[in-house]
Length: 463
Image (cartoon, rainbow, N blue to C red; front, top):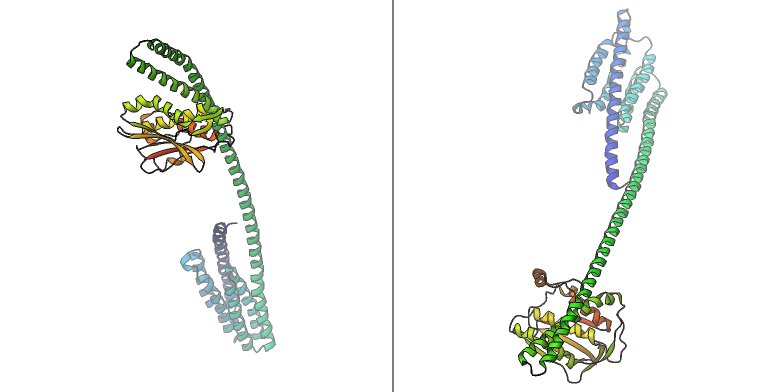
């Protein structure tokens, strides 16, 4: 049992023992009343019959009977609980008074003294009903002293006095030993039963807890399977929608290409510029569609890369041309800073989309009049691509999750724009090349996305 259980058990046990003690003491009080009444009737009858040697008994017995009746009536009241202990001393005093008064009138004083031993033994037994060891032994000591006085008054030898004291001591011991051993036995049995019940309760609680946990795990697994099924259905629906967008987009691209060819022969230069911007937009839309289609294969590591030598300056210029009008519309400066002739090894389509995603993200978060820079270089022999802007800094709490799937900043969530896939795709694409993409601190720029690629000649892993 736990300490709390043990404390609660001991408290209940003490209460139960106290209740039994009060019941036993009530029986003892009733025995005193009955005994006093019987003795009073017998002694009074003998006295009335002319036996003068019994004349000293009726008065003290009558007084004692009155006290015993009052105590029996008040028994069980807590304010007279202490009288159960004091009653033993009264019993010894009564026996001594009656017997000592009877000695001068007795024909055989030694017989009176010997008869007193039985009365004192009865008093000791009654005192043991308190279930308090000290009360029984104290009563036996008082009774032994009173018995010794009576026996010496009757001129009984000291040897007999000593034997009487030993008898009273043995009566006190035996009257305590049996109930005490029985009480200990009951306590042991009760504790054992309580421990058995407690262990059974703990086993039952553990079984119930295990059943509850298994039920919760089952429900969680079922919910997880439902979520996975919904995610698969959503991804499949997106794939279908994106795939169906290719047909009208292809028709639009063909239309722009035809217009470009027609305008190339003496056409309006301004109109030609608009057609080429339209071609750039449709080209970007086609790459976005391809990005959405490639995303599941990147997640599963099944997209096969097509590495080749890439001129970073050419890629940056192509991206700047695609976003030129968008930057001009937002009154932003789109810069390119890259060493001439810097070549990297990678999949052009994937890396182009990475740069486009980072530029589009920078344009959204840069206020009018700001700057966006496309930067490339070598650090420690390893190439890097960076897109920097002087717009709103990224929340530090968002940075650790920025490249996770469907993660968006407060601005995108409030505007309900995008699905949080651009940076996620960029991370998967860079990692497919064996590199990594992070948000780094750069002097003079609020935000810097930097993709670091492996050294040229190192093997590029599949995603």
